[in-house]
Length: 109
Length: 115
Image 1 (cartoon, each protein chain N blue to C red):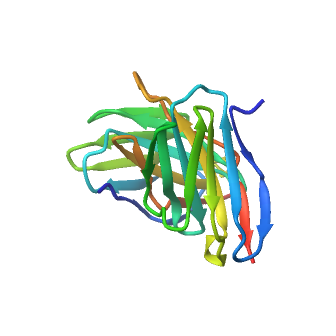
Image 2 (image 1 turned 90 degrees about the vertical axis):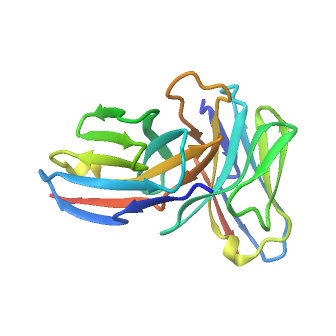
């Protein structure tokens, strides 16, 4: 059964710093997703990673996937306040999509 | 117009009442999902469906039932609501045949409070 773990669950960081959110999953996942959620809002898709070694970047966010280690990372470069949100990863096994608990990111000015 | 809609957006009900949450989509997707979100627990999958005759239990289906009335509609029912079902509920959709990096598309959520 697919299980997804994220860490850290809460991250407070200064603007301009770099940091990484980790997403481990327990068994083979067909895809790996990253979402962003702002307070009181729905989820917004950020990245979909399909294969080993996949890397995707959008602005200050970069996601990568290592299927052998069952690990995906979301790297934040030179954080800005607008990136404050909760970030979720999710694994997909036979269309059963399971989420991690989320990482609440708070970026201090 | 939004591609995935949920009704109601907010609902307060009492313990023991039956309640239905509805989800409609205009994206033509085959896959539909119901999740609940609780603070600190992320999103947990309740049920998911590939078509009107293909419905699957998720991680936490006890106390819930679903109906896929049509490709575009997927309803979640709480037969006898209890307070620990107080949560934010999300519907999501996705294409069945995925040729590329297709993702799920989420509705706006329904905030349910059971007193």
